Length: 144
Image 1: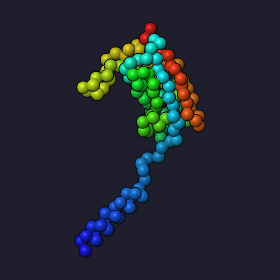
Image 2: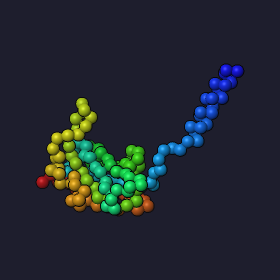
Image 3: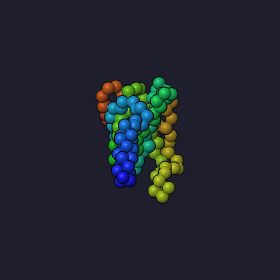
Image 4: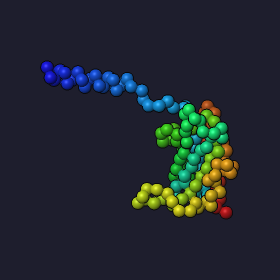
């Protein structure tokens, strides 16, 4: 009897959890990729990338798409999961290049790009996401 009761409880919990919502609603996203070069070369270390919606922050479903480039400069932007892309909109890209500290697993120190691309109000790297994947191609950054 106890075994039957326990099995019934286990199956009931599984059924209830299986029917539960999968979390908050998400906006549909579209893959956005590209390659960063610095002074004509691959950066050889990660650059931090953020996308800022030119329409402003959506108060109902806020997102902050971002990425960290590979040492060769390639990146794919994520909103909810790694590489899932960005919701439809008009964006400005900001980029910062700080030293990565493997001990603290964080970035710090001065921006090697001299803050040229770190302010969304001043960045000139703008793009649109419509209802298809976007390849931003090569984005040429400079330290000078």
